[in-house]
Length: 99
Image 1 (cartoon, rainbow, N blue to C red):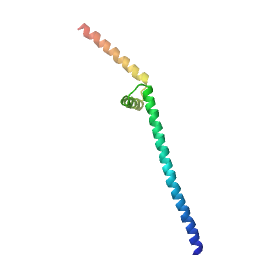
Image 2 (cartoon, one colour; image 1 turned 90 degrees about the horizontal axis):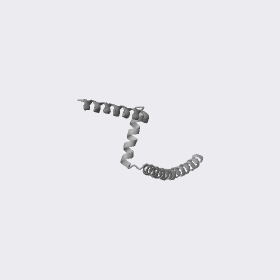
Image 3 (tube, rainbow, N blue to C red; image 1 turned 180 degrees about the vertical axis):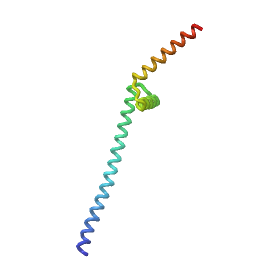
C-alpha cells in the first residue's frame, strides 16, 4: 500500500497544479475576450462615425441588410422596384390630370 500512497500523493499534487493553472488560464482568457470586445466596439463606433450614422441608424441599416439577404435581394433589385414605383406614380399623376 505504501507504494500506491506515494503515487497517489504525486497525482493529487499534479491535479492541484493543473486546477490552479486552469483557474489562471481561465482568468487570462476572460481578460483577452474582454479586450476583444472592447476593440470590436471601438471598430464599430469608428465605422459608424465614418459613415456619418447614429447607432440607431446603423441598427436599422443592419436590419434592412439582413432582410434583403434573407429574401435574396440586391441593391439593384431595390433600385428597379423604386424605378417601377416612380413610373407608376407618374402614370397615375397623368391620369389624375385628365380627369
